Structure formats: C-alpha cells, structure tokens
Image (cartoon, rainbow, N blue to C red):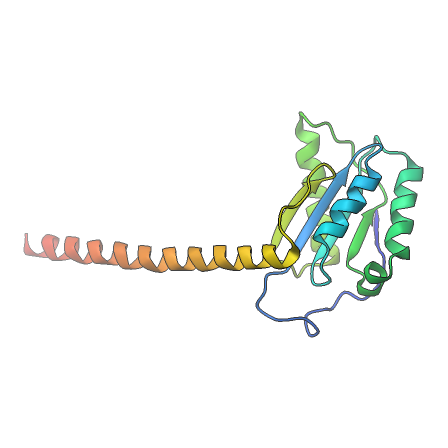
Length: 171
C-alpha cells in the first residue's frame, strides 16, 4: 500500500503546458534513506511525481522516517506529489524481483497520478548531473529530434516509394 503526502494532485492549470511531466521512481535499500532524500532533493520539481521505495531489507523505522520527512518538508507537503511505498517489495539486484518492483511502482504511479509522460527510475546511489530545468530542456530537444527525424524519414520513404511506383507502373 502507498499513501500520498497531500491531496493536491492537479497541478496542470498552475504550471506551464507542453513541458513533459515526469514520474520518478526512487529506490533504496537498508541504510540508504539519507541518500534517497538527497536524490529527491536534487531532482524535485513541483510539476513531477515521485514514488519513494525502500525495499524489504530496510527497516520499518527507516520507512517511517522517510514518510515523516516527506510530510514535514514544506514544499513536498504543499504540492503533494511525493508517494512513499508503505508495503515494500523484496528486491534482489540479479533477478526478476527488480523488474517486478519496477512494474509495481509504475502501477502505483498510474493509479495515483496518471498524468505523466516519462518515467525515470533512479536508485539512491544515482546522482543526477542535470537540474530539473536542464532535464526538461533535454527531453524537449530529444522530442524535437525525434519529430524532425520522423518527418525526414517520412519524406525519405515517400520519395523512394514514389520512384518504385513509377518504375513498377512503367514495367
């Protein structure tokens, strides 16, 4: 089970439209609670959603401390876009449990906050090299590159298809 830190989930009207909304799944294990908070602080932006998961190796006390942190941080509590997993998954880093935990996290995010465009899965040992603004620009430039490529590919395929049709019809 998981609980949101607040009920304020509709940020669409308050924030710019057209910028991708991200969902982050931030995971950690026993003794990595402080690192998980550091990663959250580094990637946090009010427009995105965050799922924090301390796996089964972590103690209930660590999970409780993390939940208290989310509720006590003014910005996190105000926007209510941080979810802490209450019932952790067993995660072994060389097996299917990692994928199962990720899929469980995605299901929780889709159930509680379905309006996101991209998922970023980070562990407590990851530290982002770009700010949220930098990541937004990167995603927009990637999207632009994909659209540009697709339009050129369409022209390219259309150009050769029309030549083949001409060649085929004259034969």
